[in-house]
Image 1 (cartoon, rainbow, N blue to C red):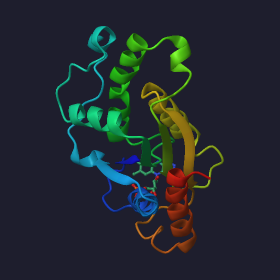
Image 2 (spheres, rainbow, N blue to C red):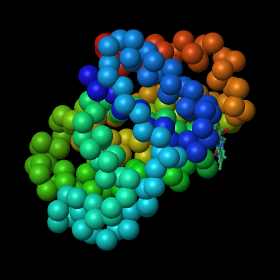
Image 3 (cartoon, helix red, strand yellow):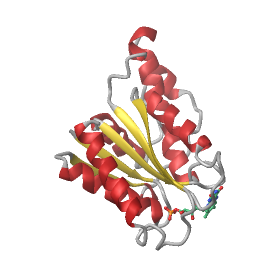
Image 4 (cartoon, rainbow, N blue to C red):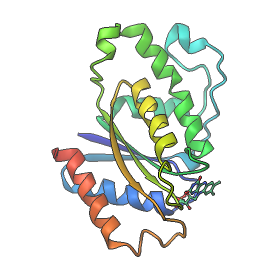
Amino acid sequence: MKVLGIYGSPRKGGNSDQVLDLVLEGAAKAGADIERVYVRQLDVAGCLECGACNDTGECAVKDDMQAVYDQLDQADVIVVGSPIFFYGPPSQLKALIDRSQAHWSRRMLQKSPAQRKTYDSGIGYLVAVGATKGQNLFEGTKLTAKYFFDALDMEFGDGLHFRGLEGPDAVASNPEIHRQAREFGRRIVIGK
Ligand SMILES: Cc1cc2nc3c(=O)[nH]c(=O)nc-3n(C[C@H](O)[C@H](O)[C@H](O)COP(=O)(O)O)c2cc1C
């Protein structure tokens, strides 16, 4: 099983990085092949809404996203790690997500409405962290993740969400998060 981790934070080694590292550690221990994408290292422009992908299923913008498209295609499981920025994902990650419009177009061109209901390209999860404790803290980002995975023809399996994390040591000093993240990584490989 190929598991792709998408590190969405601009802060290297921050809270979502640390939680995603632990999730992927658990998945690797359970036998998965792990690949990692660090969004902050990529040059990915936002979607131009140029419409080229409506006809071809391919994105006309030639930047680092072209390599990411192949990685998205090859993954059986994708885990997106994201901090909450203004109740959504950071803009760098959102640019990558918006560019999956090309996958959405390709899916519309290649699959019938009935085929699109089966989500047979795998399953995606969101690992999100935020500083506050608001009840709806993860709702915006969860919806964005759900429709990102929909564009990729993948089921959305929800994921792990941690509130009250702000400083860069917030994860390191919390053994319960370590336990839950590793266990989550194991479960996405072996099932519940
Ligand atoms: C631009 C920006 C916007 C943020 N917006 C929110 C927010 O709306 N709600 C919240 O709880 N935390 C917010 N935060 C705090 C981060 O979500 C929090 O510090 C998180 O742990 C950072 O994760 P990271 O270390 O993986 O980047 C924001 C931080 C920044 C820099």
